[in-house]
Image 1 (cartoon, rainbow, N blue to C red):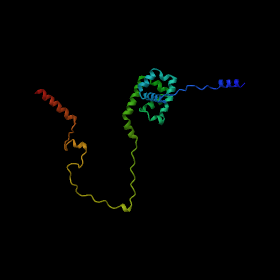
Image 2: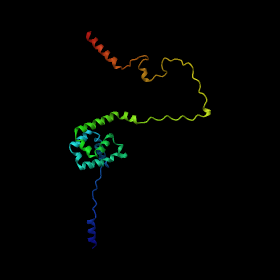
Image 3: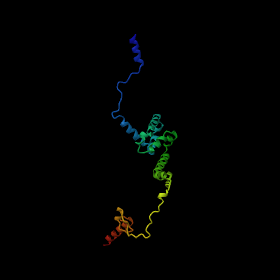
Image 4: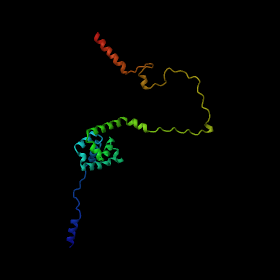
Length: 199
C-alpha cells in the first residue's frame, strides 16, 4: 500500500527539472541586448519601420514593450544614453500612437519635434530656472561700523593691464585685427594670386 501511495505522490507532484538553464555571463548579454533595443526607440524612423511591418500590432511585441518599461527605474536609467527612447517607449504603450506612426507624415513630424527639442533644450531649460534671490545682508553691529579707509583721489593711468592673459600675448596691444581674421586673409590671398598671374 505504501508503494501505491508513493507512486500517486510522484505522479501528482511536479517533477523538478534536472538541467536548470543558467546564463554563462549572468545575464550580461541579455542586459546589453535589451539596452540596445530600448535605445532604438529614440529613432522615429525605426518606430515607423516597426509600424510599417506590423510589429506594433503583434500582441507579443506589445507585451514585450510593456516588459521593457523597467528601464525607467533609477537603477537601470543610468545606463540609458538616449533618454528620448523612454519617452517614445511610453508613447508606444498607446495604440493610437502605434497606429499613427505607420504614416510617413507622422514619422516626419516626430522627427522634427525631436530635432527642435534637442536644438532648443538648453535655452528652454534656462528660461524656467528661476533666478536666485539675493542673500540678505548680515546684521550690522556697532563694533563693525568703522568707516573703510578712504580711496586715493587720483589713480595713476596705466598703459597696459598689469597681467595679460595668454591670449593677449599673441595680439600686440592696439591692434584691432585678430591674427586669424578671415575677412583680411581672403583678400590678401586673392591679391597674391592676381599679382602672381600678372607677373
